Amino acid sequence: MTGTETHATRIKARIAELQARLQEIEKTLDEPLDRDPEEQAIDLEDDEVLEAVGYAGLQEIRLLEGALARIADGTYGICQTCGEPIAEVRLKAVPYTGVCRTCARGRT
Image 1 (cartoon, rainbow, N blue to C red):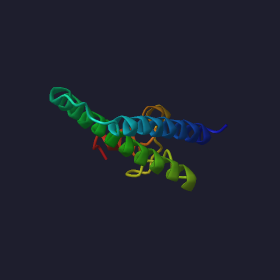
Image 2: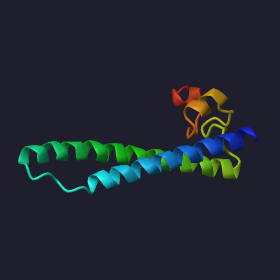
Image 3: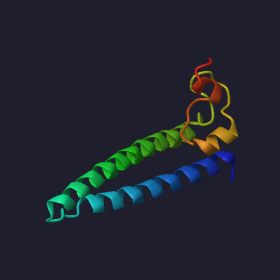
């Protein structure tokens, strides 16, 4: 398996993990509220946190899908700003990154 195939496999696994988490969040959010007003307040606060986690998950999925698109078109691992290769360690840590460490820091 090539490095790009390995990245694609890891990215797809992460997307599946996030999608499963989002399904659990949706299931929890669909549960009816407690009859007790104090419990309802707590449930609503919890729902807000879950919605934020869900939104973050959706954002990560979009970024990961972008990485898969770059794999498909052969530009994955190439900095979109300077055109230099992105370090393998960075791709492992942030698989959806489209920029090298230097450009991410704003030192182009």
